[in-house]
Length: 209
Image 1 (cartoon, rainbow, N blue to C red):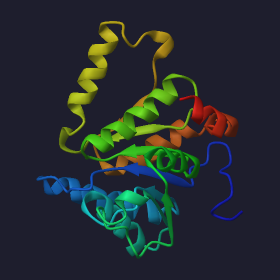
Image 2 (cartoon, rainbow, N blue to C red):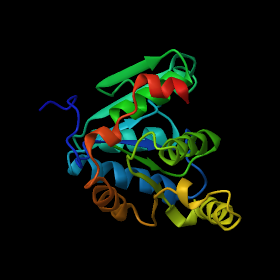
Image 3 (tube, helix red, strand yellow):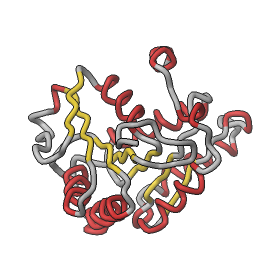
Image 4 (cartoon, rainbow, N blue to C red):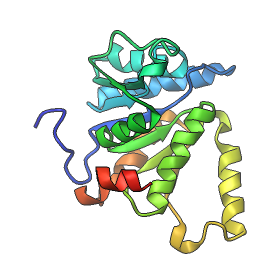
């Protein structure tokens, strides 16, 4: 099986990591990107990410590459210069727009992780949670809650549940890892019972969203 072959049921071969084009002001964020990139490469898991060479994006991509891992960067044409498309990655996919970028990131990944980041990171994360909530796929989604970065979001989600805006029939399994070493084991446990068909979002389904 090549690295571009569809993943078997329950098998994580590539993880899409959402993260900032900046580094933030806490050194723990950059360290987490480096550590998780190393962990992925050491376990033979490829990185799918936004294709940039700056901030958290650049850090995790370099970490995977420095440890001999595979990296797929997916970036829209208008961000190639702004986010300094990474010239070192093996496969750089340039898309027409953000919608195509997110669709291709979904297609290449078996799971999703949100490291610290800004509005773009939040938007990509919430879109995946929406797709899970609407039953479009069952790929696991995890927060890298480094130094409590995602705690306000977790509190907001709990608030929505208490007020019944997230009802039982619309609930979703959002994994929360406080340490980078916990992320991959959580994803593997969550992915184990998932059939391949439940991890697939067809092009027709994507256009309906």
